[in-house]
Length: 379
Image (cartoon, rainbow, N blue to C red; front, side, top):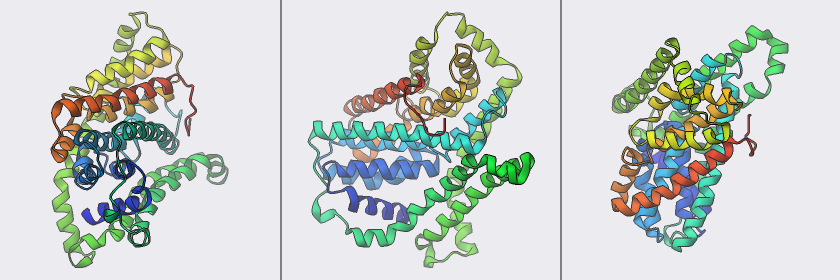
């Protein structure tokens, strides 16, 4: 893992490190990419932050800005496939509005949402670098592009191995139906969803083999790797499973109807809901994980939005951004922020203030996207 992360960081440094604030852009690109694969923002802060935060600090990033930049970048990965919270949200949407969208099309939509939030963070970082007069990465610390590319280019193929099968399934649905029929097309979609993670995992193992003892992929090394990582994987899997189980319980009890009627009883119109719900989820993110928020309130809020005339698919696509991305950013339950603070050695007050800039920019974009003004890939 360290070898894999370091090769990506070095490749990005060789490309953008010469820009003012280049180390921050490396953190944004690298941490978002790695977090989308791991599906855990705080864990990714710990894995990539030990590389990116010290590099940012050496290029005149204040400690609190380095911490909040890494935190915001890593938490963005929670809303980009194959993150588990994206799959959880699709399950709830499909229960409420069956067959409105295939899983592959949903994944492409999630990439579209993630792209907007990536651009938002890019603009926010550019402004903050101007304000704090951040410098480029010192020349003596910049890796050579040729050498970095030779080591890091295989990692660039990994996101394509995930994206392209899903994109093909989503975009060529009519062709598949004409060739395979409705049942065959559905079976193909299911096969893609099961095959793609296995393909991506196998490829990651091959290109990351240099991080294994003796640079070999064998049974012993695989077992040791599984033994070391099982405690990190199981909590994530159990959390997703329990969250989905809770959501199914709420659906079975028709709790979304009760909550929907309660919310509607206040007489809010659609513009008010567009503003209030992101703020509500921001507050809930201070005490509840994003998966729990979606399990408890996701179905009800989707139906509220639809009842008031909004597009339920649009709202559902932004649920991970309102919950999973914010849970590790908003104090006091801000695990991503606390991990980054520990690595950066920054103080709580100034880091929290810096984090609020990222949070409010995130919420503002959420509100704009909920209005439907901006086009989203896949919608």
